[in-house]
Length: 95
View 1 (cartoon, rainbow, N blue to C red):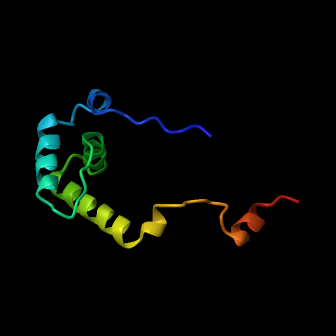
View 2 (tube, rainbow, N blue to C red):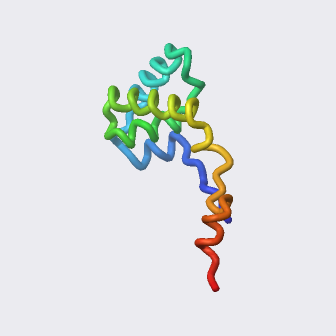
């Protein structure tokens, strides 16, 4: 299975002219002031912005929600084996 290629901030900015470095900087500064948030790479901040149509406040809400869910429900984000459950394996067996 091939791994997904991580896109760089420069590549994202070339593809999306709406993405501004100043917005990334503002978002990074906001994140640094949130003690409960981890350090987030600029490329991920760009993806969060893109997914919220480059609107700052909705992007902040999504970042907050994303990391809150990751903290409170880590099972959704780790050890994700789609064929891990016995019932699911049986459902996918072809006879």
